[in-house]
Image 1 (cartoon, rainbow, N blue to C red):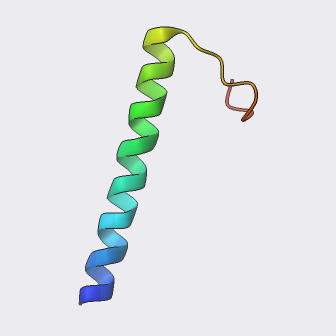
Image 2 (image 1 turned 90 degrees about the vertical axis):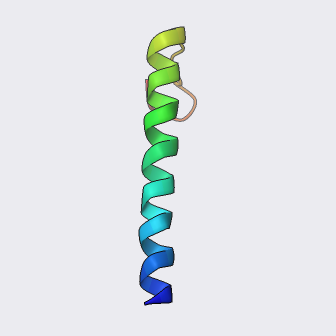
Length: 38
């Protein structure tokens, strides 16, 4: 149960970070060509 909870929170954390980065990129209009996400 503990491991499952950790994995679940890990996925949620990654999703939040990705969504935040995408939102900031859209708002600021920054092309992240270095990472290949532009």
